[in-house]
Length: 369
Ligand code: FNR
Image (cartoon, rainbow, N blue to C red; front, side, top):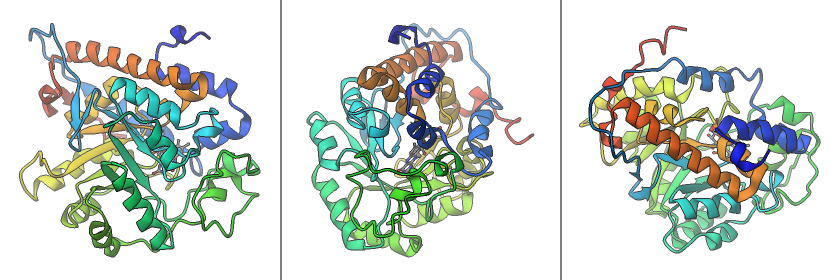
C-alpha cells in the first residue's frame, strides 16, 4: 500500500511480512524458544490502564525531552537491531537519515550491516548517536572500537548484558546462513562461524560469555562515554549497576530473543524503581532507566514514563518501517508516533513529559496474570 495508508506501526509489520524475503523475515521477527516473552511484551502494556486528568488547558503539549544529555524530539530512541541490509539495501542508514531529519537518537548496533564509520558519516554534524556493544573475547578489539566511537562523537555506550550466548530462535535456525553481504562488515574474529543454524548464530560467535561485573571498571577506564547496561531484568542487578557507577540501565529482554519466559521490561519497571528509591533521591539525574520491548504506540511510551522510565527504545517498529519503505518509512513512523503523542497527552491531561506522573496510570493489574 502507499505510505499514506499506513496509519500505525502495526501496519509496517504487516507490509514487512509480505515483502521481505523469508530469511530476513525469519531473522527479524523471530524470538527464542516458544516465543512466550515476545507476546508478553505486548500483553503487559495492555494490563496498564490510564487515569486521565481533565480540564487542564492542553492547547499546547510538548513531548520533547533529553536522553542522557542529548535533545530528542520524542521520548523514544531507535534501539539497535543487527543486519539492516537484510531488510533494505541502505540498511541502518535509513535510520540515521530519518533520525537526523526528525531529531531522534539512533543506537548503532555492533552487528550493523553498514560499517560504523559509514553510519557516523551519514549523520549530520552534532547529531547525537549511541552505540550498542557486544563485547569481544579479544578485549583489544573492543577497546579500539569503543575509543574510536568516542572519538567520533558517540554519546553513550549501551553494553548488551543479556546475551552471553544468543537465544535459540528456531524460525531463524531453520534458515541456512549465506553470506550475501548483509553481514559482511561484522567484526573480525569470527573463526567458528556456524552456517547451518541461522543468521543469528552465524554472526555472533565472537561474543564473550565470560563478561562479568568485574569488567565494568575496565570499561570506565577506557571511555568517558555514559555507560548503560542493556538487558537488566531484576532489582538486584539494577542496584549492582547503580553501585558499579553506570549511568543507566535498559529493562529489556532483547525483544523476546534471549531467555524465553522472562518478564517484560514494563512489568519489571515498578519493582526496579522501588528498589532504586531505597538508594537515594529519585528521580536521579545521574541514573536513567530505559525500557524496551513491544513498544508500538505512544500510549505504551507514556505508560513507561509514568512508571519511572526516562525514555523507551523501539526496535522492530523502525526496522519494519525501513524494510517496507526505506528512509521515508522511518520518517512516517516518527510522524505517526508524534501524532499519537499529541492526542494521547491531551487526553491524559499532561502538557509535558514532566507532567506524566505515576498517578496517571493504574498498574494494579500488571501482576495479576
Ligand atoms: C535486536 N536487538 C538487539 N539488541 C542488541 O543489543 N544487539 C543487537 O545486535 C540486537 N539485534 C537485534 C536484531 C533484531 C532483528 C531485533 C528484532 C532485535 C534487540 C533490540 O535492541 C531491542 O531490545 C528490541 O528489539 C526491543 O523490542 P521490540 O521493539 O523489537 O519489540
